[in-house]
Amino acid sequence: MQMRTRHPRAAGLRPANHGRRIERERRTIAAMIAIYCRDHHAGGQAAQDCPDCAELLRYANQRLDVCVFGESKMPCNDCSVHCYSESRRGRIVKVMRYAGPRMPLRHPLLGLMHFVDKWRARL
Picture 1 (spheres, rainbow, N blue to C red):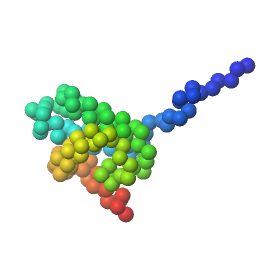
Picture 2 (tube, rainbow, N blue to C red):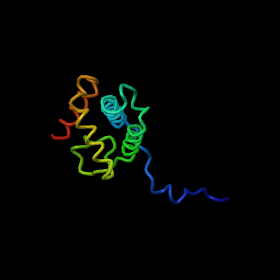
Picture 3 (cartoon, rainbow, N blue to C red):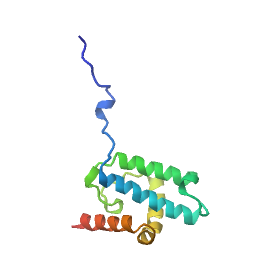
């Protein structure tokens, strides 16, 4: 009888993060990118129609999948690990700086929860 073994590459991979905190971060970043895209390039269309913003959202979700902090994640601007590449970090910072102050008006619950998460991280 032969024992089943795991693929050698699969042994080092972690499962993707799928907790409540990470899912809320996904909704928050999607809302921020949608606000930025609607006001800058989409001309009132959804962010999914803009290839640049859709690619940035895909990359942000990929980074959330492999976040080393998982459910104890702090907001990205307070994080000690910069998981975005240099080229995309500038783009995501630009999006967050623009959309952050507009979040309470367009997405009040997500904006409030993001503020609470930032407050908790500083304690």
